[in-house]
Amino acid sequence: MADIHEVVTRSLNINEKLGPRLKAAAEQNAILRIGWTNAGDPVPKNGELGLCPALPEGARVRALGVLGSWVAAFGQGGSFTIQGDAGSFLGAANLGTTVVCEQMAGHFTGYAMADGSITVLDGTGDDAGAAMRGGTLVIRGASGARIGGGMEGGLIVVHGDVGPDPGAGMSGGRIVVNGRCPPPAPGVLLRPLEADEVKEINAKLDDESLHVPSDAVCLMAQEKLHLEHGGFVVSSGDLSQIGLINEENPPLRTYQTVDTVALIGTRDEVKSLALPVPLLANLVSGSTMSPDGNTPADVTSILNRHPALVEAEPRAVDVMLIGQSNLLDVASWLPDAGGFAVDLDELPPMNAEQLDGLLVALRSVASTNVPVVLIQGISRIQALHARAAYHGVDVAMARIEDGSGLSEAAALPMMGRSKKEHLQGTMTQAGFLLGFAASGHDLAVLMASGVDLVACVAPTADGEDIAYWLQGTQDDLAHHLRRIGLSSVDLLDRKHLRALDQETAAVSGLRLAGYGRPLPHWFAR
Image (cartoon, rainbow, N blue to C red; front, side, top):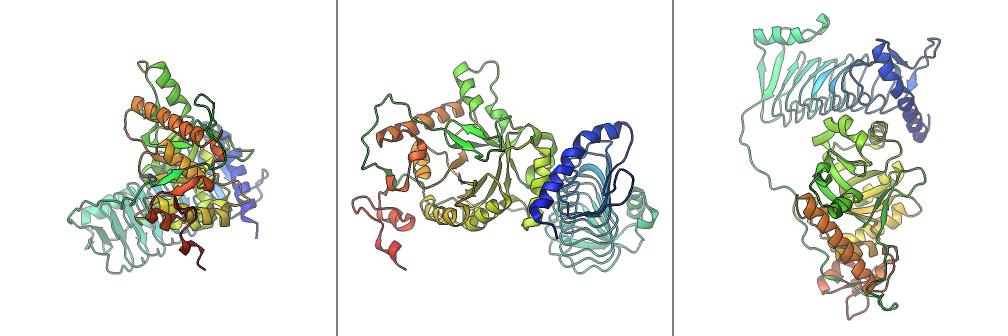
């Protein structure tokens, strides 16, 4: 069996070679083939993943063999046919591609699709059609648990038996089952099809062998109470109870230049992003950082040189944050971004092969060699760092406010231990995603604790105000560096930190101010 890194490299090479040929083939109405030699001899693929993302209108691709996860994802049009099996997330975030799998498909087939059609001719795994918003998913053969889970719209037709909890959490759309169907999940209505529905559904299906009979059943969402959810628990503290000192160096002169620059991506092959200060503003849209003709020149300069972490409309210096809510926008926006971040908390749990498939697909859509970030809650930081190192991503960023209620001070030793265990000797940087607008003092404390990069919410939604905040944060960081006698943010170390109260010392393991060392329980075995 081929090494997974060989499979990833092979898959990226296929996408790279295929990309320029798609447009020409579409204009000539030609079919591009994967798994055959130029002479037409079959050479079936074996495990290639993330193939053919964001297929454009008019493209036609046929593949032979057993393919891995995230094949034909983010499709915009055209068609993709697999003569063989497919892995998980086949046709995910489909916006118009016609996908046909002539044998089996894995879990999450058609995940978050909004348009187009997917046909699987020999059954699927669990969670087929999960988070579906539109389009048509047709499955011949058995399907696993939770088919149509969380779906909001669209049509699923299954000619075969379905597993437990069909339609769990669905709020729209229809699931038609021509086979055995267990009792649906709470909030889902199981009813017979009406005659006009049978005609309407069969009119959508091109293949008569896939038409539904009149005795098929239909699952749809029931009316229920809609409750507002408060979201994640806010962390219980900030970094104000941690002080910065230097017992060795005298202060620098107030006019002395200090280095506050940080990089996202330190590998030689990566197109690193330079940050004037180790901080990414977490914004909804990159357009917030795009000045107009009336913006003062100094403000324009600040906004243009500061990258941000954005969900929509990224600039060339921005990192696009990718989760379930904007998967359908990947093909439109990711090519313009300077990097991308995958929010693992916003996507279904993925094993190593599935995550590799997603990363291959995203890297193939993005600009060449942009930095890659993985984001996950602080309570899973060990797994996050281990996965980031294994997959060779550039930054592993832990979200502090993940619902656990852990404070920033308590997160510091968690990050330090995990970084030492999993990231030492790698080129993967460690980051924190904060739930409050960071100050220069906060950045200095985090950098001294071993954090390489910080992302946080901006204190305002106005671009000009954000520019003042960014410049003020940079000046504040430089002030603290001069005060403790350091010429660069890279010289900050844990020895420069002191806990200013006993509670902070108890949870962080930092030396207690006046006591001069960590509290005794940090030395207990």
